Structure formats: C-alpha cells, structure tokens
Image (cartoon, rainbow, N blue to C red; front, side):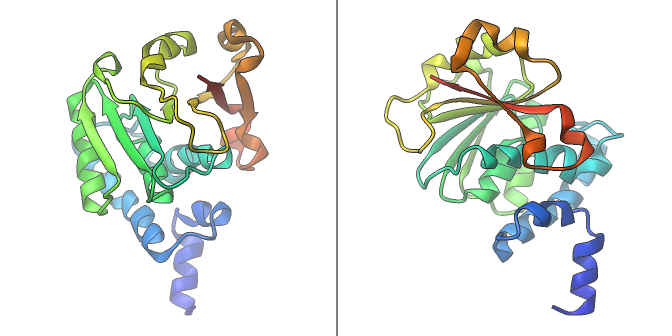
Length: 219
C-alpha cells in the first residue's frame, strides 16, 4: 500500500470501521466510503441525521449499526426487516456487510425512504428493498426484525410479532434485535429472562458506546 493510500485510511473517517472490520472486501470498503459524501449531500437537502451528528456519521451511525454483526452473522438467504429505518440505519450498513442476506427497509416518512433509496442506489446495493409504509402495513415474514431506538420494546414486539418467520436459518433463533441506549431494565422487565441485553462497549471501545446496548428477543 502506498503512502497516499495509507494516509487515506488514517485520515478518512471510515478508519473506525476498518479498525473493527479489517476483513472487508474492496467492494464493501468502496460502498462504505461512499456513504460520507452521499449522506452529507442528502442531509443538506433532507434532514435525516442531526446537523451536529453528520460529522460523526461513521461512529454514531455506521459502526453503531454494525454492532448487530457482533451478535449474529446473517447466513446467505436470511431475510431481515429494518423497522423505522430513517435514512437507512441499521439496514444499509448491514446490507453492505452481508451481501447475501436480503434486507427490507421501511419507514412511515416518505422523505427519509427517498434518501435511503437514493443512497442504496448510488452505491449499487442489490440486496435491499425500500418501502414507504408503517410497520402495521408490512405483511412479509422475516427471520429477524432490526431497529434503532424506534419505539418502546413492548409496542414494537406487538407490531412485529406477525412478521417473524417460523423457519430457522441462523445460529441465533429468529426474533427482534434492537439498538438502544440508556437505562433499559424497566423496558425489558415484561419479557423476563427471554430478553437479552448486550453492551456494545464489549465490542467497540469508543466513549459513544458506553451506554449503548443491543436488545435481543427471540420470537
């Protein structure tokens, strides 16, 4: 690797992704690197990421989304539904990481789905379907439902139970995987021991992840 290329990796904000996912193919690196310019451009037209947060795109949004990959490695053919995807998180980073799994990204806000659709198209993602609809309207069956701080857990469980497939395909049983922050004991209490909490700080050492967790609920 030449000096220029090495400096790019050190200086480019995507360096934080390569630190934890050094096995990425050239295509995956290209797709992830393109997100910076695409989201910066789209965010100036349609606000899907807070203005103060866009500079932390890779740490706060891309890497946070990829924390799910520390819990489960989706096998080829796995069907995943991303509820309330917003601008495409966690669905787009996960679709890049698992090109042989299939991802359906839904959101009730049309302009957010527009951004996610444009970003996915620009980087050539072929394993995503994007829909402008509410989760109540989604009828498909999926091995996993993923989300990032969309709504309280009990409400989300009630809405997506109909979408969980019965046929198993992964080492982790089918269910719901949520990215959440803060104090969650009261939220998961109704589910007893079936709800599993994982500290993202077990995988990623940045300060941002100190209070971030993965909630997994087999369904």
